[in-house]
Image (tube, rainbow, N blue to C red; front, top):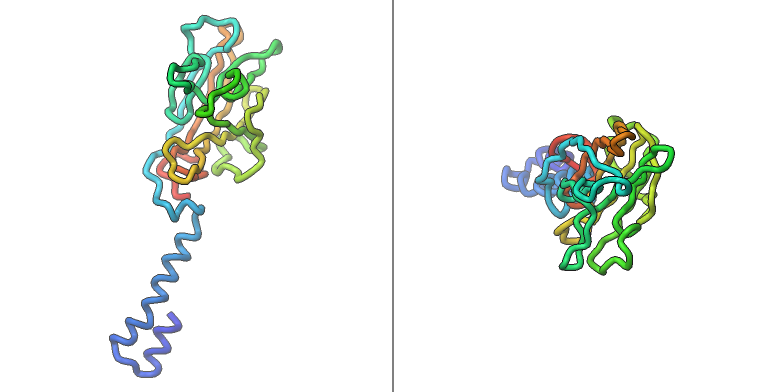
Length: 208
């Protein structure tokens, strides 16, 4: 803006004024891009964040036909399984403690000698409520370790980003809504951001 005003003040012709103002336009675009995460340089988000609720069963003391795990990266329930190709079908499995709290078991904490293709999962307990948590923290995640949580507690997850060019992770959040102890069933609320490196944990197409 200052360059353009300077050109007018000196009586520069219209073409010169446009040439002088052009760098300012480029600078503004770069500054706008910098307002988001670094992933703004590799493309805009294309996958919508959707809030989900699901029931999952304890890994122990339940039928092998019941889902006891969740693959956040595809938002599918599963019974933990090592596949013939050396992969697995889940990110986190669920179990119950003797006092009916929930064990969160990332894949590498329960798959013995996990294949090289099985990626680590990081988890972090949040001090914010599930609804108030709108953005995943950048650091502080504990990798491949079991967490024990109660009803209402919120956990943030750092997950392997499927197909992310630069190895950026996906981020997700979950909360234990309720525990039906007689059925060994756990009701969970979750939201996963399946846009490479984007940390927004709110419903809709994330902007950062």
